[in-house]
Length: 458
Image 1 (cartoon, rainbow, N blue to C red):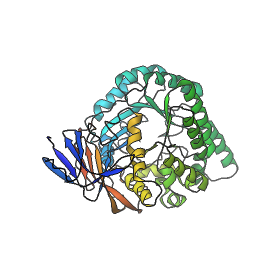
Image 2: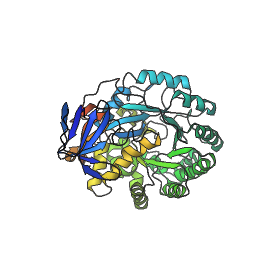
Image 3: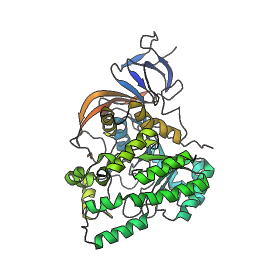
């Protein structure tokens, strides 16, 4: 057997279990999985002794901020942070300037992005014009993204789709393409009314008040209830994002049991960032703290992560400058908020493994396999099998990490986990047979990432 690279001495982890073995790579593909002592020569060898070998992580919820907001992040810096964090493929969102609402803008964005990406990458576009949906599909988009939330950037009012009739029209067209549609649920008018009532009752115009309102269960669950009905009628493949509402999770679990084509994702700010983080770090931590104070909701989140109700841990990697966050402090309803996640998210989740909150098989399912299946590229990606792309991340489970701003690759150069002691980290990231990050340093070449079109599924 002709082998270019042998990843030797590690434990290969999948969504169903682990095994000791070596990964054999030729060119861009895995060509064999063999025992450690199996005599197959290779041109080079990577030592994974004592470490775990995961499929490369895949994230379908990134904000590269390009075009229009490159001072926050851009294609290169986003993919550098992703590579450092163990990701080999990501997909970014349409809330840029101009927003990706027509095919011409998608094609222009793709042409620029292909010069910069280190990871493989895709793009979710906005279906605000249902007539554009089949054209998007023909142009090779990765999928679609609907925002029900509206306000100030990053929740662009031009992209907000709160009317059920508008969503129904988009779902109907998207269902015919066989591609998936991610949705940021929100009952915006209910949020507006509850805001008015709360402020009129004397609550301060503060981050804490905003965060409490924004994470109110009913604002999310009432939206998800309508979305599930529209999905049932249209048959669209719908992924619910930000699924931290306990009522929403119970409804999604029931919908899955009925056979509806629904998946769910959660990002870590809703169950890892606390009220203390909000108090100490301000806009870096908003808005998740109020969720972590609700024990019943946290129990439901952990149940859903482990029983398959939640399919993916995505990142919602959402960089803003520290100057932006000062605007948020003054006006949380209109100022920009969100936080970068790529640099430390895998260490964060591995710390959960050490705390016995989930196992390694669940990490692979939640952070790699499920997303690959959603966009129709499994097992080419999201797995380590013969014929799979040689996308992998070598993980040192025992390494301890203290999160710092200075060590980040994201362009905004801060992390909401600053000062946290984490256990476990990626030590090597390989994308299609090429090492793109090693020992915390990005070594991948800009422009070597490859675009990923979504694969229609009947």
